[in-house]
Amino acid sequence: MAGAPLRAALRVSPVMSRLRIAVLLVLLGPLPACPQATSPTPTKVESKAGAVAIAVAVDDPRAVNATEDYYPASDRGTPLSPPPAPASPGTGQPDETNGKCRLFAPELPDPECCERQLGFDVETVKRACGLKLYLGESFYASCGFYFLPDVVAAGVPATWFRISNLHNPTPKQAAEEHQTYTRKSTNDPSFTAVPIPGIEGAYWSEREDLHWAFLPGWSVVRQFTWKDDSCTPEGLMAVLRALVAAPEIAAGTGRQGLIPVANPPPAIIPDPGSAPAETAPADPAGAAPAAATRSAGSPPG
Image (cartoon, rainbow, N blue to C red):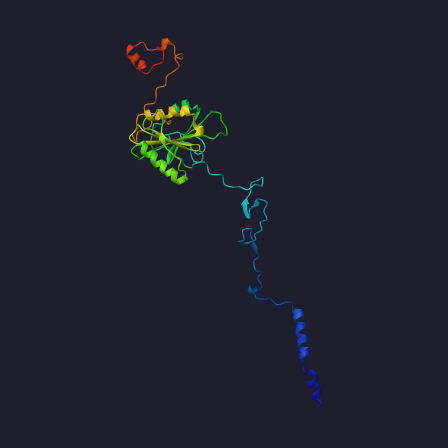
């Protein structure tokens, strides 16, 4: 029976076992866990547009944050953005680098020279309408010509005229077709095309500040368009007569220069007092052409 107390003393109770395990864990410290189970989840940040983005911290004085994006900065701390693309030639300013025409379009990108010469003469229009500076031409469905009333004008909208050729056989039929289309598209039954007084075979129409003329004289009908402020009524009639009188220029004919002219250009009668009499050629053979170009009201030279 003497061994019974010894066996009782050596028996470990369940409470003592748990206590010893706890002490052992304290002494050994926390055990390493599986890295995959303890890695932190990346923080998700909602951007202004609602899209999920990963927060990125940039600790660099050369970086500038702009609209949630980071750009390299210059020495002054401003973002380096690519320079704007240069405007296409002729957009917003006249350009003659194409070698074919003086190209100009107020806003149209990549403008092109007009496809065909249609009898438009820049100097005739400048004289008739009191315009000083010809900016250039560009083609978009029809050919547009742009002017300024003064060579030093700033912030003034360009004055424009447009001309195109139509496939109608006569100006009357072209005007009637335009009348039908405009009445239907505008729901305006009063819109009417009428003959142009003083120009046989020509018709015109108007709506608000826009005007259209349908011109005879060529194998194709030409439509001429302008606005109220493009020219005075008297000057506009002079332009229309010049267009009708201009000899037809066949499609594909080469240009005489960068500036549109009638072919041949209209004779310009100089001021009678601008040239001294002694400058006239003495050769009688040269006098005949001079006399032929003299207007009926000009005094003899």
